[in-house]
Every structure is written in C-alpha cells, then in structure tokens.
Amino acid sequence: AAAAAFVALLLWAAAHDPLAADWAERHARLRGVNFGGWLVAERWLVGPPTVPGVFEPSSSWAQDDEHDASLARRGSGTTEAVSAFRDVFITRADFAAAAALGLNSVRIPFGWWIAAPTDAAAEPYVRG
Image (tube, rainbow, N blue to C red):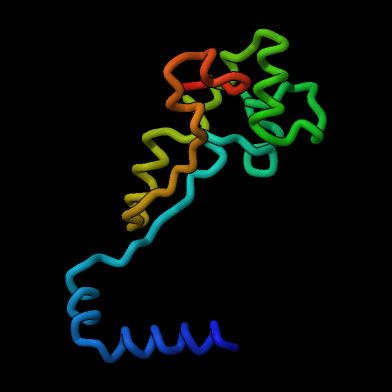
C-alpha cells in the first residue's frame, strides 16, 4: 500500500510540477526494443533451432545458458559457431527495422566476457 501511495504521489507531482512538464516537453519519450539473446545466449530466447547456434545441436535443454554452451563448445572445439551466431542473430537490418518502426532506443544485454582482453580471461565463455 505504501508503494502504491508513493507511485501515486510521483504521478501527481509529474502532472502538477511545471519543471517536470517542461523537462518532458524537451526530451523525447523512449520507445525501444530489447535485443536479448544476442550477446548473452539463453536457450529460452534463442533455442532451437538456431543455425548457426550457440548451443550444441545434440545438446539437451539441460544446456540452457551461455556458460553451459561455452563449456560444451570449448570441449568440442567448435567455438567459432558462437561467433557465427552473433554475426547473424541480430544484424544492421534489425536496427534499421527498429528505427523504421519509430523506436529510438535499443537495450543490448551483454556479458563481461564480450570485452575480455584475451580468450583465456574470458574462460569458460567465448569472448568477442
């Protein structure tokens, strides 16, 4: 109840505060999309079939996140499939399509390993 009252107070203040109204007029409303599953693969977002895929084609649903998939890919020597997936899952065309729909913001979740300085520093993940 207290949280609802606080939200109501914030909404009232936004509607009745001239500074808030002025700020809202000067700033565009964010309209966006989440490009999840691209740089942090989770089976429930990208899962089967994805070709080329982050997840081993023969893997079960027990391999459900990038950690497990990276371990499997490293074990089988097929880490290039992860890079290939990242190249095609989200492309410039997807950004252009979002812009054409009037979207002005994009959320791109990514793991720390994407920016790791070396492959060894990213282990067990596939960096880059």
